[in-house]
Structures are given as C-alpha cells and as structure tokens.
Image 1 (cartoon, helix red, strand yellow):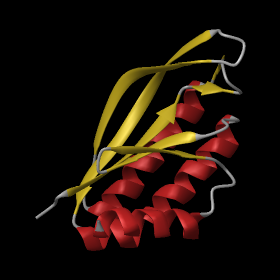
Image 2 (cartoon, helix red, strand yellow; image 1 turned 90 degrees about the vertical axis):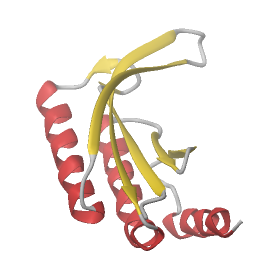
Image 3 (cartoon, rainbow, N blue to C red; image 1 turned 45 degrees about the vertical axis):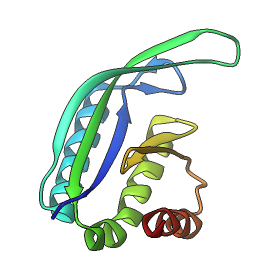
Image 4 (cartoon, helix red, strand yellow; image 1 turned 30 degrees about the vertical axis):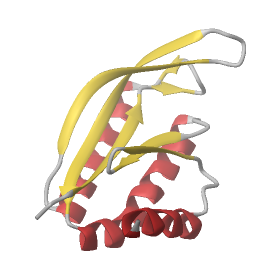
Length: 129
C-alpha cells in the first residue's frame, strides 16, 4: 500500500521576486519529475499559485510547480534525503531562502543549510508516532 506522500514545491522566482528564466524552471521541473519517477516509481506534477508576505509587508505571488509521489514507508525513508538534496539545490539555483517539501500533509521549509540527518531523525519520529 502506498500510504505516504512526498511533494516538492518548485518556485518560479529568483531572489524573492524576480522572474526565474523559463529555461531554468523547465529544466528544474523536468529533472525533479524524473528524480521522483526513479525514486518512487511515478509522480504527478501540478501547476499552482503560491504567495507570502515579505518582511516589508509586500505580497509576493508566483507560479509554483508541485511534484508529488505516493510511496510506501521504505521508499520514503530511502529516498527522502534525495528530495532534501534536490530542495537545497533549488534554493541555491533560484536564490531562495527556503523551498517547501511536504511529507504526509506536513509542510517543511528546507534551506540550503538544512541538516539532512537531523531532518530525517525528525521525520522518523513522526512516522513512528
């Protein structure tokens, strides 16, 4: 039974609110879809809108691409470090402070400096709860 879900949110902006180059977005989405297909056996990619308010109070709204997979617990534990690595790479390439990763309905903000080992420990504790 595939009773776990993993979703990675890919932004369309760089450095907070500048439009990312279309080629960068396309290449990132395609590489992420391939990665999820390899790790989890398949994926669903959905385009949506996301937004937040900056520290100065400005509303930032952008297109986002959500690449998601269902998986069993073994695949989740085995492959989640690769998802975190991909999120960190997106942070670097897009100049983002963080990128969202959703696991079983809980949203996590992954930065380039996220400690993957600690993140996996926290996830393991949630899976055992």
